[in-house]
Length: 465
Image (cartoon, rainbow, N blue to C red; front, side):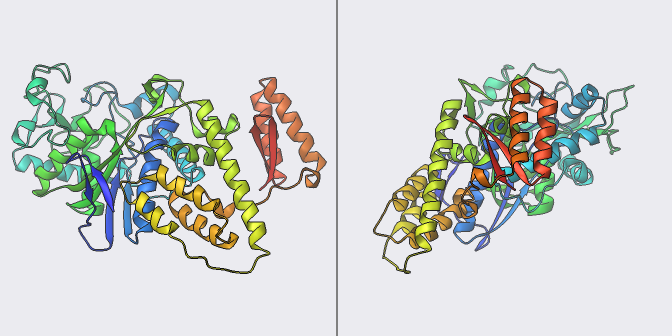
């Protein structure tokens, strides 16, 4: 199995630290808002990586953090805390905001059939571990105190910026951030921020340096150390994490622990809306719930994501998603057809090398698009029995995660109760009238009667729950 390692800028053979076992850490959501479909491209690629590792027989210990404190509106330690800002806007506590958006994130993960990590640590649950890491950095001479917090002195870490290939000398001219007189170097970053004077924050803790909260970068270093150890196999995230967040993680972890932090750094590219990266801060973003309102199922979006390699930018468009929906629906029809044939055929076993081809593709830096082509070629191969093709499809789907084994023939319209169909018609009219409250109420009534209504291009579809 081979993976592209950002640290070396090359595709390398994957060799785990411990034979047969893999420890993997992935940067999770900041729960001050809805996670948009661009965020889920990252979580999807990490899910594919995990599935490929498991397909190869590895026992994977997977950790994904929940950032519920200390993430400022700028990666360079400036601006407001996103959690506190959202709580003020909503008139809620930060704890209520965190729980609300964490719950939605978990539901969206389930809808997209993303295998949950072994552990979802929250930053607020590991404050002491973060304080202990700052103490270790301080004892080793890597920190200094300013009026607004405790900072990491990047000049003390010789390899700072190595993975990101940062031009440190260029940054000294102030290209990265407006230079602060209290910062010794433009690349220095906070490991502990002091609470503003004369202001009571909802999330703040006592520390040896004063009341405050941990710097954003610190949580991943402290939690990965606690849950995976000082040195582990794989760290994932989006490419936007490379120059700041992951660079700072490496600096503070290796300085504190005195050894190599991570063997393989694996990063996914952006989902683009037009020519711009999708970002919650820009507004107008799409969520999984919004896609469902437009008549697209989570599996349609999952199939859409399968059509691009994780290290390539992917342009999102409704036309592209519609094409993925059409392809997925054809795949469902093919599976249903094979299930009908398999029920009436004698079991045969024709020699073939499709599994070897599939393994070759996915093990070449997660070549998922080529693996998808192998699936379609196999499904059209009439020299194989229907049972063989179904067995292979279900086996390949351990990686694709398209829930092929759950595909069932849709209930005939004549078998659906008239009252359910009437409510569905009323709901469609309410939606046309933009009476969304009534539309939601009717959807819930339909659900209580054991059916799910799904919007489609031609109107709606009803499916038994």
